[in-house]
Length: 295
Image 1: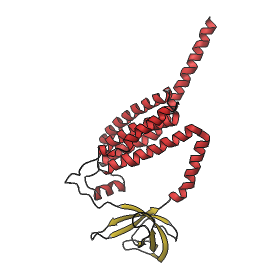
Image 2: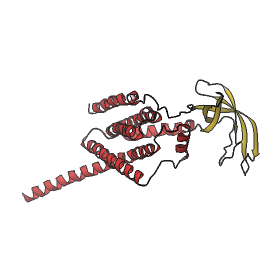
Image 3: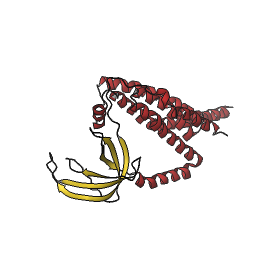
Image 4: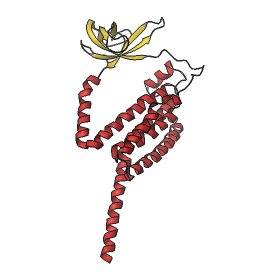
């Protein structure tokens, strides 16, 4: 019965998770140009049509060139065979693919409306699945019921990020506001599921909220003071190039700082609350012992 509030917290959080339309942006400003949305799909290498060592145009060193036949394994075009050339442009790292490799592709449209495909990376989740299963088993065996509820909290946190926060950011909504709203849901949900509903956890939740406010103020102050723009990575330039004016890159930088702080605060605030609780308990014992001795 003591875990009923946890179930209630899950149900309440679900309202926020599956109601992103409440924050949706109704329309994109007229001065914002949005490129054709890219789609990520999966494919498997079925045949290597050509393979050679070449110096691509504009390059200076030999690199591996491959002409690959791939079969799409996800999405509406599942089963379709396509041909992709890889290594025909200068690159610092050109992987050598073999038959059977699972790959991630980016599907886009060219100027004539035809489908174009680019290899993004390997599809690694098949290899990571055994590690995930091992992690889940060890967590439940060691933590038992609390380990199980911790896994639920972690899963719900990812759902909040991928179903609420990221779609809102992709819609061009203010990153800082959306991240703060998401954090207000994630913090109590994960804390209470992982550590139970008690005074220690409540203190940790309150301390985390206060710390997040301080982090937000300090991050905003010093990001503005040091004139950080958020354009230090290629991804930021890519967003502006293909979706000019849609994303607040500095806001995304601040949002990343806050999201990054959540994981650290989970451990720090709960540990500090537990230490203070134990010190208070020992202090009471010592005070009682002194009073008894004095009598």
